[in-house]
Image (tube, rainbow, N blue to C red):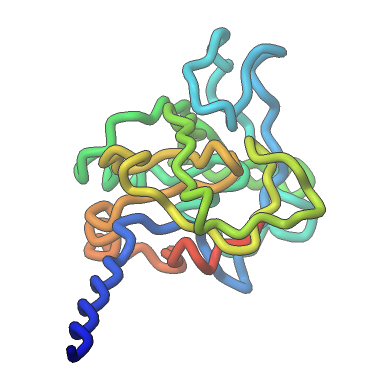
Length: 199
């Protein structure tokens, strides 16, 4: 009796999520901004217990006062007003923002038109079977060492933008938001497939 033909493999569906960053060799580099209180962090993905004083002064690192500022820094969590408006227009509604200025005291430089942002949403969205973690680091929350990320769309629940709970420094965006930001034409903004992400 002839063997039954094998069923064709189901096509792998592309992930609807991407990591977001900025790349520019001539970019301005910024220092860290303090957490608002002992109980708060810009990486916790939740509302602050104590609101920070504004405008938040974001230090420009020495030697970078004349470098090119970005619309989206990510680290520290700072974005231009224009970038924030684009996010809102695309439907993002889980950001708390605070007026900020980029400051270089040594060079008497103050750049306005920025927001420090707190993403409300820390989501355990990694596909644990497909994500490749470094065995040298046992942590799987906040500061996991990831060699290749896979996002489980069911865990992401359709969110347009969120922080990844496994590695809180990573900001994850939905494909629809990616498209909206690409249409807005922000230079140096980069979207990467999760499998390319390394922490």
